[in-house]
Image 1 (cartoon, rainbow, N blue to C red):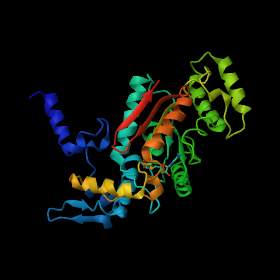
Image 2 (tube, rainbow, N blue to C red):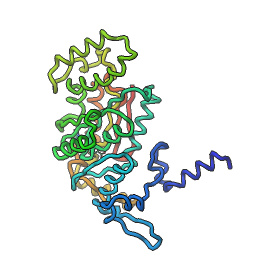
Image 3 (tube, rainbow, N blue to C red):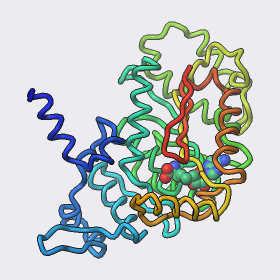
Image 4 (cartoon, protein in one colour):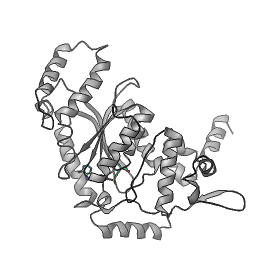
Length: 325
Ligand SMILES: C[S@@+](CC[C@H](N)C(=O)[O-])C[C@H]1O[C@@H](n2cnc3c(N)ncnc32)[C@H](O)[C@@H]1O
């Protein structure tokens, strides 16, 4: 056996094969976290651990409090993030969230030809109380994010999480209306101004298009915040090309509470492990389910396609869907 194959086999042993198949190559959780180490460092994690005769630590994945403790302790241990998630809100599983970000990073590098030194600006639709994607993207990858939320409790918790980690320079949390998905965000003059200035700072060093810059800034300055800016309204704008590098979304998937139950039952019938569902109903349910939500997202994205390089979303089957300029 070649050395490379041997190393690969050794690496693949680190996570159960079924899980490893879906884990991005750069995902740090290809090596599962040690619950023993976590319990030794974080007293708040200990109450949810049980020990077998061999001293191995086990966690009850059916207890939402145990899941919350696992996620918040890992965010602190592995990313130096202090995150608070209110009791009844969605607890994100970190390996899957990292997969999505790393996949976007691949698309940015390979499909959009971005350099690692570029200022990356994205939008996370429906950030949740944890604000997990924007926090990880800012801390791990150095990106800038606009995080949108419709829910008051999630908006407040997400804002607190951003402030508690001093990431206000990288993340704007915006409360939005549930009638829209991207409209009112991508065309918000205030947001555009802040993101444009971030990109301009770096581009100024190697950009000779000063006239275009002046024209764009002058229009943004003369557009009241929270109102559409004509530069982003349609395809005719050349100077503000790709103000946003990507949009991402983990949408509410279900059309009713009953549908969330039927998903649980079918997982059980297939013998798949079920961790306790977390989150309140309106984080998971939306009128018309994911089809209506994603259709609206696609329609609104189309309107702004000259402003966003990569448009993406997860779906209820765990697939990632994208459209790239
Ligand atoms: C499935 S949760 C995802 C939360 C978080 N991104 C995560 O992955 O853990 C969906 C979130 O989208 C929010 N939401 C629903 N409709 C929305 C809309 N039109 N615009 C922005 N957020 C929305 C919900 O309040 C909820 O927090």
